[in-house]
Image (cartoon, rainbow, N blue to C red; front, side, top):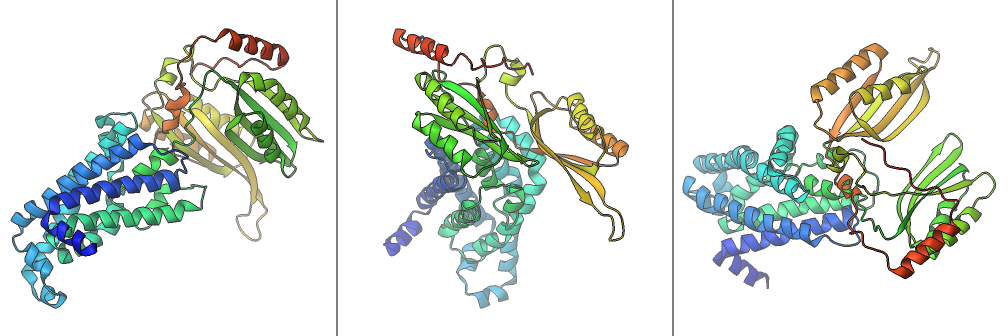
Length: 458
């Protein structure tokens, strides 16, 4: 079988390279969706898009560059690759020719062709435009190229020095797949992502191309698909923690045919707080709420309210248009009264919306003989629904740091695709008479539940 494959690759190098690159790219995205994003259902449309990129660009365009074009620019490339190592070391002209191929590939082809093509594709898949993709590449190109060269300069040297012309594309595809497998193994058992760009930078990949695929899912989770025909409830529980509480809540939801869409759980001081977004059939709400409230034991207090997690016609247009900026906020410095107020005032002036936020204090000693001082630590994620003035943000943070003797940083991150999923994927439709009666009965049974609050204007 391997002999037949090798013969086919040699006799039909273009077809083999395109097919191999197409299959590799599809399989890479499959690995990312299953092992990194842990999706229950594969997004085959996205997979087909990346497979097409592998077929057309990685297979077709790169084959044209590496084989016929480089073959004409460097006529001795094929004979040099076929020589044994000792002969290669003695062939100075051939070695210089090989290095020139590496330079053209890594310092001309990838910066000017590969990355623009990939960023454009990634942005189009994400719902953006080619110009937005090129703008993001302009912001990331330095980090991308450094990551690229760490792995791909050595790999390209091996490719141009040892691989026959018909195996150049399969070698590139195999190296890329090898990195995807490393990334999948590194991330397979870890559900916590701290700084994914650092993980991607450990060995370097073909720039951040794989991180781009990775970001499509990881930074976008959870991506909800809300059903407007169902009720959505917000369960909050607070009080002294006890083992098994979240398990009991999840079991209660499941017994009534509901689904937990989102969970936030954390400790505040000695108390435990959890918030759950639950989707349920209208007829099941009353029983679910009753059983949920029976879970309250001792110091645990459970509250329930209706909510509407998707966007409505009353929401601000700039919010419906999506998020144009997201960033990770970090702050540390000497603690004082009013620091939280001052920092949130700054974010408000900069028109940055807080998506998540946490703050705490700790004791810190400047030296072994120094008395401890109280230091505050804050972190969170902020976003903007408009085109931000990055210079104004940087100047505002710098002034705040000088005035308060602290360090506040804001690291821009990839825009989270899940923000666009606030809009329902289901078209509203008139209720059937029976369904309307069931909903009316449910409301009479659960009249104590507060109605969902109107979404605040952004």
